[in-house]
Length: 193
Image (cartoon, rainbow, N blue to C red; front, side, top):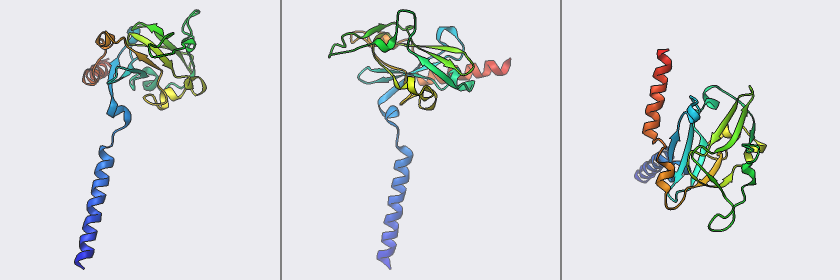
């Protein structure tokens, strides 16, 4: 009897440990990346982007949950990496350790154009200065990935800031706390209208 009570108590303890482990388990993005935000890109209210910065300085450019694509319930019709008549981000061919052939991007360099089902075109930009390592070609086949899984399979591009100026490439981005504060300000402005 005592051994069965002891075994039941051990099982209960293991279940508690499993429940606690499941509650504290964080995603890869949460564990290894720092989120930074660029809001109101090109002074367009609600066109917010998120940059996931890894400790090795690699930046993954994504759409923030506060972007108009989300807040206005747009569906994505198509995504084009042809950002101008002369520049197609799909032509970016990178090779070797020094990332030869990578396109250099400024903070406001367009990465892609997203066309919504209503015909509105959103231009998503780099937000960081550096080399374009890759664009997410999966978005061509399945453009709604940008809305369904923005921080994983729906990322826009991977950018590598210069080694000698990693802070310069990301200094203009907001921290999570600053971003949340800006969202609160934006919400209170809309309520006061």
